[in-house]
Image (cartoon, rainbow, N blue to C red; front, side):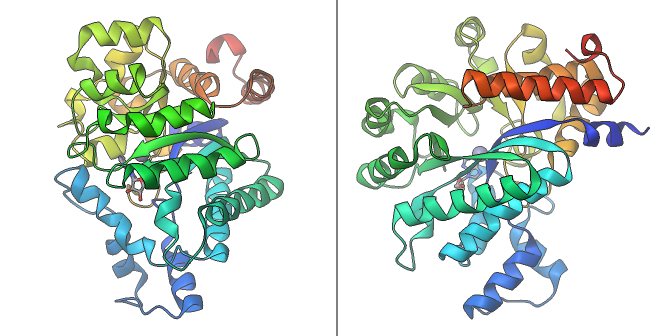
Amino acid sequence: MKLENIIEKLPKVDLHVHLDGSVKPETVFDLALDQGITLPTNNIKELSGYLKIEGDCDSLIEYLQKFDFVSQVLHTKEALERVAYEVVEQAYEENCKYIEVRFGPQLHTNKGLSLEEVIYSVIKGLKRGEKRYGVQANVIACCLRHHSTEENKEVIRAASAFHGKGLVGVDLAGDEATYPAHLFREVFELAKQKAIPVTIHAGEAAGPENIREAITNLGASRIGHGVRLKDDPELLNYVLENCIPLEMCPISNIQTKASASWDRYPIRYYFDRGLMITVNTDNMTVSNTCLTKELLILVEKFDFTLMEIGQVIMNSIDASFLDARAKKKLKNKFLAEYKRLEMTSQQVI
Ligand SMILES: O=c1[nH]cnc2c1ncn2[C@@H]1O[C@H](CO)[C@@H](O)[C@H]1O
Ligand SMILES: [Zn+2]
C-alpha cells in the first residue's frame, strides 16, 4: 500500500482546525447564492484564489487577510451550522476520529446573531456531523488579538455557558506580532475563574516570550504552534518537564513564515527531545491541506517512521480537552483499528 494511503487509513485527531479557514469553496458559492451576496467570480478555480494561499505569503498578517473574504457568508445560523457539519464530513473523509474546531464568535455577528446563537449553531452542526459520521467534534472559542478586552471577555462568558455542552476550551488567535500575549491577562483571568481550559496561539509570529506569558500568566495548558520555543532552551525544558502539548501545523507554519524553511522547522528536534508535539491542519482551505498531507510531510521531510507517526497521534489524544474516560475510550478504539490495519500495538506506540 502507498504510504499516503496508509496514513489516510490511520485513525487520526485534529486539535487545531479553524472553522472559517476550512470552508469548502463550493459551499461559499452556495451560501452566497442563498444569501443574495454577489461574488466577484462564478468560476470555482478563481474563487479558490480568494480563499487559499497560492504561491508566496510574506507573514501571518498576510495569511490572515484570507479570512476576510469567507467571513461575508458566515453571519447566519444556517451557514454556521452547515460549515461546521462539513468540517466533520471532511474529517471523516480522511478517517479523522476526533476534532476540536475553533472559531471567533465575535466574527460572526454582523447580521445580529448573539454570541450564544453563533456558538450554538456551530455546536449544532458539529453534533449533526458527529451523529452522521461517527467523528467526535467539540468547539474551542477564540478571542481575537485585535478585539477589545470587553469583546474578548464577552466571548469567555458566552463560552462558559456551553462548557461541557460541546465546548471544551478557549483560545487567543490573530496578529501575534502586533498584540503580545501580556495584553490579555484580564481576559484569561476570567477564563480561569470560569475554569475553562485554555490554549493560546504563541511563538508563531513572535518570540518565545509569548509562550512563557501564555503558560505562566494566561493559564494555557496547550500552545498553538510554538515554533519559536526552540529560541529559549530554558523554557523548552520547562515545557518538556511539564508535558505541555504543542499544536503544530506544518504547512501553515511554512506559509506564515513562522519557520523560514523546512530545514529550519523544529518538529524533528522537538520530537527527539521528547516534547509532546501534535500535528494539525490549522486551516484546511486557506492552507490547502488535510491531516494526511501534514503527517506525510513528517515522513517525507523529517524521516518519521510509522511508529513515530502513531506516537504523534497518541499524543493528540492525550493533549485533547476530552476527559480521562473519553481519552481512554478513543485510545482503545485507535489501537483496535491499528491492529485491524495489521500493525501490532508495539509497532504503533
Ligand atoms: O495560524 C493562525 N494564527 C493566528 N490566528 C489565526 C490563524 N489561523 C486563523 N487565525 C485567526 O483565527 C480566526 C478565528 O478562526 C480567523 O478568522 C483568523 O483570523
Ligand atoms: Zn490557528
